[in-house]
Image (cartoon, rainbow, N blue to C red):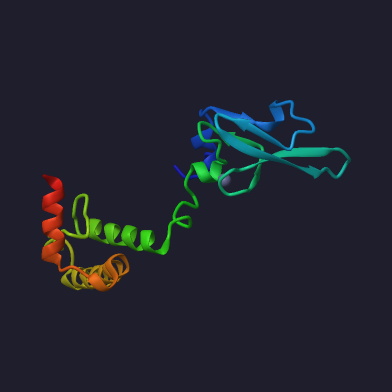
Length: 165
Ligand SMILES: [Zn+2]
């Protein structure tokens, strides 16, 4: 099933509770507060006169006619199309190291785990390349998190064990 055949992201949200500006009587209102969320309303002029009203997505600020409950976000924000872009560079590196470890078959990986052994069907070249990439990435992450006081891996594991108890 391709996104195109089924109308892309539209389909995912179609059954969800939503707020459609075309079904609201809001003439003249500049904003609206609902379930603790403030939503700005804007207008654009139509070619043939009159104007069209839009919500401004409280998250990305895009103009849209429909916002999805319960947090009243547009369909792009709701579907997480841009979620990686909203991550900080550190978050993105953490996510990338997690993905790479998962590629090596590690289940619910984190930084304090040793790198897994080579998965049976993976080429050694691929395995070494991935390991190298993970080590470089994680060295960068640790430096960013700990700065000068970079702990050793053994210390990190000890912290892990202590917090687990
Ligand atoms: Zn949005």
